[in-house]
Amino acid sequence: MARGPAPAVDLFPLVIAVTPSPTERQRLAEHLDGVAPLLLVADLDELRRLITEPQQPAEGSPTSAPVAEPEPADTLLVDSARSTARWRDREIDLTRLEHDLLTCLATEPVRVWSYAELHQAVWRDEGLQRRADVQSLVKRLRRKLKEIGTGVSIDAVRGLGFRLADHRRPSVSGT
Image 1 (cartoon, one colour):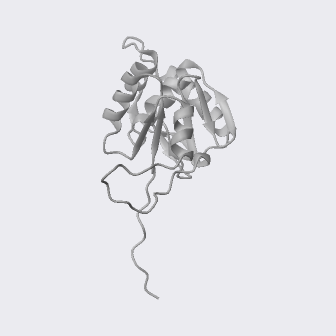
Image 2 (cartoon, rainbow, N blue to C red):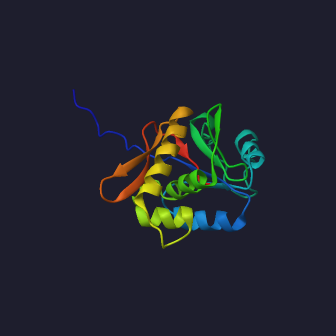
Image 3 (tube, rainbow, N blue to C red):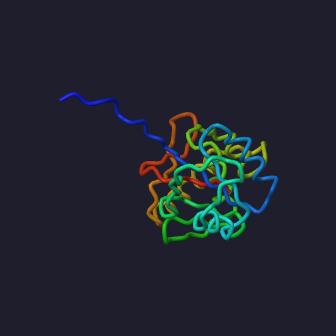
C-alpha cells in the first residue's frame, strides 16, 4: 500500500514570550523573526485574554475559519516578572541565573549556544568563562524542568555547547 509523504513536523509550533519590558519584547522579536510564529505579551493576564476571548476580524478584512489556538497545557511558559516556569498545572521558581539561561536558550531554540555565549548572556561578563559554571547551571535547570514533567530539555552538543530541545513538541516561550 503506497503512502504519501510524511507530514512536516514543526518542533516549535509557537513561541510565547511574556515580559513586561518593551525593550525585551523588541529584542526577542528581532531574534525570533522567521524562526516560528511569535506571540509577545506584557503579562499573563494579557495572554489569558488573547487565548480565551474570541477575536473579532478587523473591519474590511475577509472572514475566515477560526484559527486553532495553542493549548496552554502544551506550553512551557517562562514568566520573567515572577521568575517562574510553568508547564501545565505545575510551576517552579527560577533563580536569576536559571531564568537567564532558559531565556537565552529559548530565544533561538534550535541553535547551539557556545559556553562563552552562554556565560556572557547569563553572567554578563567576558573574563571568567568557566565551563564548570555553565555545566552546573544547566544541571540544576535540567533537574527543575524534569521536576515539572516537561518534554523540553537542554541537550549538550559535544565540544560546542548546549541547545534547547523539545521531545514532546510543546511550544516554548521566552521571557
